[in-house]
Length: 145
Image: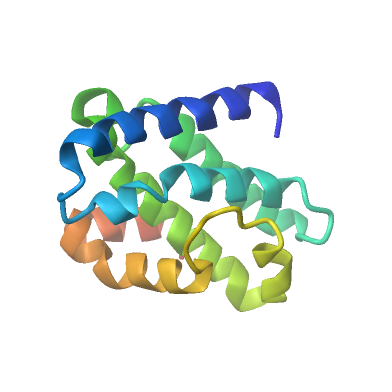
């Protein structure tokens, strides 16, 4: 991971940890806590030689979406709640990747504490409740999923 991505990773990890001290009972806290690990996974996969170039382009777009201050739920205005759309983007992109690649390629880069496959499935199942159907549809259209 390059320095820019590493700094972003550390910043969101710090922001989310601070937020969780006051909001640990929030029903979306377990998802928001996954944001740094999902970002880290995206950056590791985009550098993996066994990931096809077309998939790297989608991974790169997901990374750019994570970093961009302008997205469907901007973190600058919503704090860690703004990561919910980024988390959904990561889950949909990773699910698409897992459907086409050997899951071990993805799993070898996972640094999170929870089971990745379960987490992705759980995010996708709950994404409409987290974000609303319109935002989920926009994400799917934007990433052609």
